[in-house]
Image 1 (cartoon, one colour):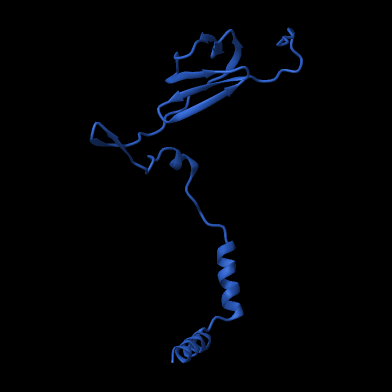
Image 2 (image 1 turned 90 degrees about the vertical axis):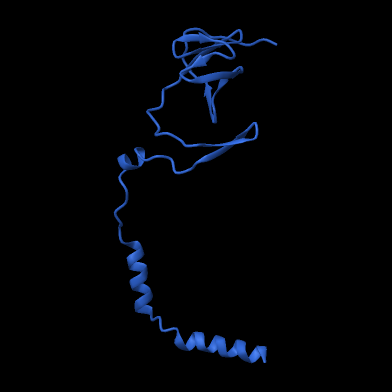
Length: 137
């Protein structure tokens, strides 16, 4: 009995499906038409739609993100003796640079953190440098 019902259902789908080739071509053409989207300036000024829930000391708080302002430019120029030369000043671990805390200083780069944002800055390679430095083990 179940097989008969399945056969009837399959047949009815094929019988009542009245899509022709021209209808399918029209649908494909509509998909390919250029649609007007949202301007980039509008997207830049919109608020982030996601809300975070933080739990501290058995108290739940909603953290609503604010509108993003223009992000500060950070550039790493040098690393010497555990200090990093970032944006024309020397910084050590734990220092605050434009709202970011310096968390790690390596041989080729540094890691900065601002709440949930992490930035990694690396030294740029300059092929023709006036001073050549070499590491010795």
